[in-house]
Image 1 (tube, rainbow, N blue to C red):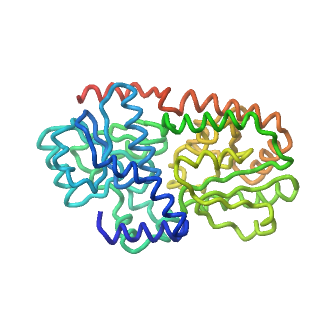
Image 2: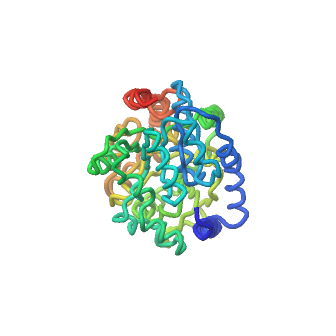
Image 3: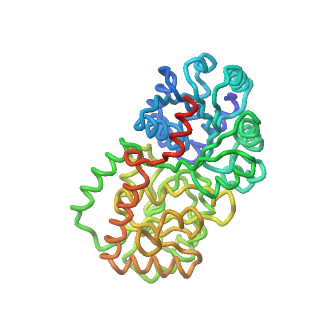
Length: 391
C-alpha cells in the first residue's frame, strides 16, 4: 500500500479517536499484523489490505470458520514481502478488499499461470465507484485515500474474467454481484470462538447484575461513516428521552452527536472506540441496542452484525427495517424492526416500559445468534463443498 495512503488512514484514525485512543486500537491489531507475516502452507489463503474490523470479520473469522471444517486456511496482508512466494503454497486465494497494485498484479498473474482459484470477497459496495460518493467516510478521507476509493477497492480483481466466484455478507450484496456474472456465495459474518468466549463470560455476569433505575439505549459505531445512520433516529430518540426520564443514551465509537440531543447531554454517555477484545464490554452496558441505517444502497448493503453482537449478550435490538435485518430478525420475537420515526418511537417505548419483554426478546436474540452467527455452529455447506472441489 502506498505510503501516502497509509498516512491518510493514520490521520483519519487519530482525528476520530485521538492520539491515545488510536494507539490503543493499533496495539489491539498488532498481534494479527505480526501473524499475517508468519504464514504456514495450506489450502486457502486470505489476502487483506489491512487489519481493521472488516478484515477481522472477512478474513480472520472466515479462516477460523473454515479451519473448523477441516480446511487449512491462513491470512496474510498485502504488505507481506513474501506474498509472491506464497502462491506456491496454496490452492485457493481469497482477496478481501485488496487494493490493486503492481505487486498484486504480479501475484494474480502467477496464480493464473498455476491455474489456481481466485475468489473476490467484499462486505460492502466500495468496490463500485458509482456508490463511493454515498459514503460519509469518503467525504472526510485524505486526498490519497479518496483517490484510491474513487477507483473502487478491488474492482480490477472483481472484473477480471478469470475470477468466476465471489463471496459476500448479505443477499442484498449478492444480487448486485450476480449482475456482474459471478457465482456468489453468501458467507455471513459470524462471531469467532475467542469473542464468543468473551461474550459468554460477560453474559454470565450480566445475568447476575442488579439493574439501576435507568434504561440504557446503546449505539455502537465502528467507523465515522455512520453519522447519517444515527441521524435517522434522532427525532425518535428525542421523543423517547423526553417521555421517559429514566433513559440514558450510550454513544460508542467515532460519531458526531446531533445538536438536538444536547438537550439531554447530562444523560448521554460517550465511549471511545475500543479494540475488539473490549467491544463486548461496551455493548454489555446497554439494555436496548440501536441499529439504524440511512436508506441508500451503500448502507443497505451492510451486514447484520450489530444485531448478533448484541444478541450474544442477550441485549435486544431495534433495527431499521431493511432486507438484511428483516432476514435476521423476526419482528416482535428476536428483536424489533422499525421503518419510520413513529415505529422507532413506539417500539423503543415498549421495551423501555417492559423489562420482562426486554429480557425475553434478548434471550431469543441470543438463541438466534448462537444458532446462526457463530463459527462454532457455522453451516455454509454449499460454499464448503465448492472449496473442496477446488483443492
